[in-house]
Image (cartoon, rainbow, N blue to C red; front, side, top):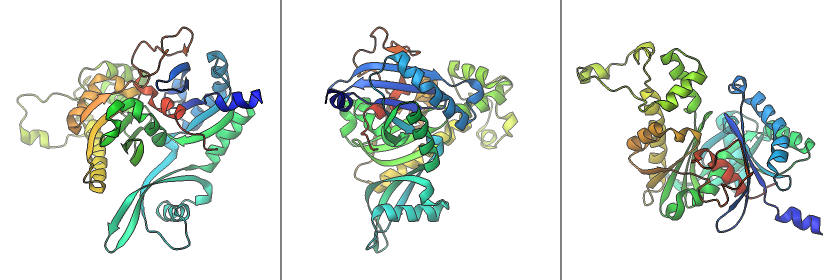
Length: 375
């Protein structure tokens, strides 16, 4: 009986299989959660561009991380990597005799060509919409290859670890939103932008309810690749110089006319030699975010997006957050997911992470810790 009670009451360990790092977090629940343990494992440079080998490396490293960090128990809540997850909005027309799961699977197959039996599919109903004379249900559909999920579960089970839940990164983030946005989380719609190294995730939520989700391919790695071309150096050096840059766009010379700046220059001429100019990527990123916000506001004209919360490892770069906030014209702030957690400075509680500094990249692990078991 004591063993069963311990298993039921021990908090699950949240595991974020991120592109640049694997983050592992365990917190004790409460009005203000307290830290049990936190660990970070950096991805070797040679694996950054290989998602499957990177995941294998992280899965193999996880048991040692849990032992070294002195985590309690072996129950895990894990994320399905965003780069290998489809996120799509569907407008589904209800039909007699078919449940919503069947309708979503059929429509997803029609649009993507993928056999639903080869996918793990979850859907989240958003609202009812009107198209002509017919009513449809706006739905967020999230799907991951079943083979990938089974492979993760089998590997972890062989390592004597128990997976209690598997969540998409987008939905897990919403579980952390009350702690990230504070008291304002329940007031209007919040745009939550997770700027990562491999991908960026955008979620719009009403309170903790997700009503819009999208994966955006523009992220830290794509910026580093462009910086590498412009600066004539490797990816690692390009990342270092990008993160140190006070400005990410090239100031326009006083002598340049509006007509001249309107003409698109060839890619190799977009920045002067040795000069960093990410204006095209920043414009593309803000355009993507703005389109998402407009889509949401069209669905909910009486509850438009009111604020933005930035998280993710890339938001540690102040110049990037500043450029995005200016372009989006929303009240925005960079959140530190570890700030509301008690005991972050406790001796021996953290491995390879400096909790005396802001850690915006820990929103997803926090959200996983707050997510329900679903297996």
